[in-house]
Amino acid sequence: MMPVRYRALGQVAPNIHIFAKGTAAAYEILQVIGRKNVRDHSTEGRILPQVAGHIELCNVCFSYPSRPEVAIFDHFCLSIPAGQTVAIVGSSGSGKSTVVSLIERFYEPQSGTYLE
Image (cartoon, rainbow, N blue to C red):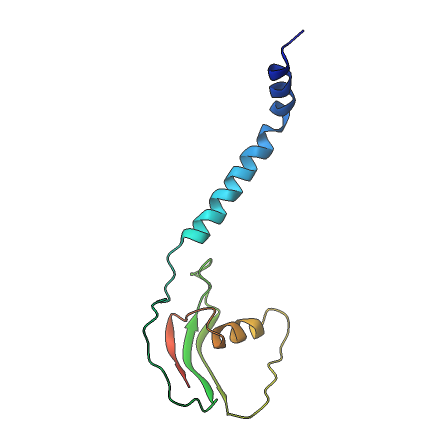
């Protein structure tokens, strides 16, 4: 009869490919986590004395960091006057959530400006 430690190893052997897939997936996740962000996270910056609420995106060019070769916006412009309610509508995949993510500064555009 085989010692217990060898039987346990024998039971794991058929599933080695699952461990390999998990290791590869973890490597990809750690690459994303470790990627240097293009946004400066310093605590210094301009403090605005008053915020009017007008939001404007001017000539924004944007690609997701995971797919930099695919342009999501190319010279996109949007103006939302202060105090106005705005609905962003469109079909699935048209960029509605991306516009909101850019306004909320979850992403930085490759070029263009934000005006406040």
